[in-house]
Every structure is written in structure tokens, then in C-alpha cells.
Picture (spheres, rainbow, N blue to C red):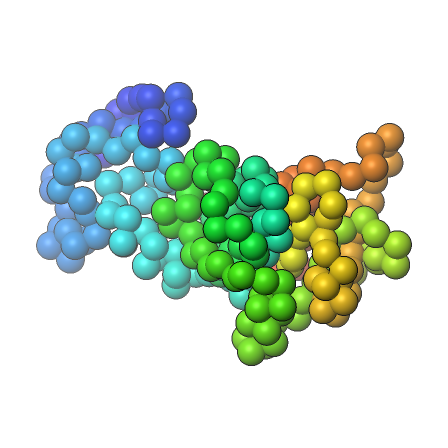
Length: 217
């Protein structure tokens, strides 16, 4: 490995320079990118994936993905989607589902969309049909009347968490199709939490209950 250098592809965080020392073994060579070994790796990846090809990284994450799916209703080209994708990647979520508009601001994803499974659905009905076919329990996340506390609810293991766009929140169709709607406890003056932040809180609640924490980086 080499000393850290920067800036990286996504900001000022350092990467690593060209590979130094003995070359990777023949058994490991297939996972490494010759150009990265030669020039250095400034991508937004954990150290364990330095110099690996994109395909090798995805394959390794695929072996460890959790049975958690995330969906966001993108009827207004929601800028929070990038943040949701980045957090989903950090937690090795199975798939992020985007309902409605295909276009979204990828800047907030910090390049993690290269490694995260993404799937588009034209409508909420299509998303709910997918969840039923996949055996996923749909849980809506929004602070609406009738919602139960996330902090007091055990999220199912095979789960699809669905979030609405910033502002309007989840659609009536999503709430009607969910087995339960959960809200995040708040104590200040604001009426709602940013959708990207709410998604991170809910994902972590699932991780706390169902993930093998000893397998985390």
C-alpha cells in the first residue's frame, strides 16, 4: 500500500498513491485494477477496497447485502435521494427504489451510486406489487396521524422502508399499502426532519436490530 494523497474524486479527503511493495498474489490479482495500482486510488471507498475494480467491490458487497430495501417517492426530483443512496450504500442495503421521476441529483450520493443497486418504478402501485412479490413487509416512515413510534417498533427483517418526497411526505397510496407507518420522535420546534436524515435514522434502527455488527468495517 502507499501513503495517502489527495484530493479524491468526491472532495478533499485523501486517497492513496501508487501501489508499493510486493505485487498482489496471483489469487488476488483478478480483483485489482492495474491502472489504480499504477496511478493510485482516490475513490470514495473504504481502505479494504483500495485498488479493487468496481466489479470486484460490487461483488463483495453483494455477498454481504442486507434484506433491507429503501424506497423514496420522487415526484418532485427530490434532492435528498443522493443522500439516501449514500447512506444505503454505507449500510449495504439490498436495493434503493426510486418511484416517479427517473432523474435525480446524484451529487449527494458522493459516487456511491456506482456500487449501490438502484431500481426505478413508474408508480407507487408498481413498487408495492414488487414488495408483495418479493415477500417484503412495507413500512412507511412519516410523522402523520396514526403513525407509531419507530423507537418502540420492531422493524421486520425482510423490509421495505418507504419515504415520501421532501415536504408532502408519503402519498396516501403508500400509507395505505404499508403494513405500518412509523414516525421518528422529535422534541424541538420543527414539524419534520429532512427526508435524507429520516432515512438514515430509520435504516440505522433496522441495522441495530438485524445486522451482524461484528461484520462492520
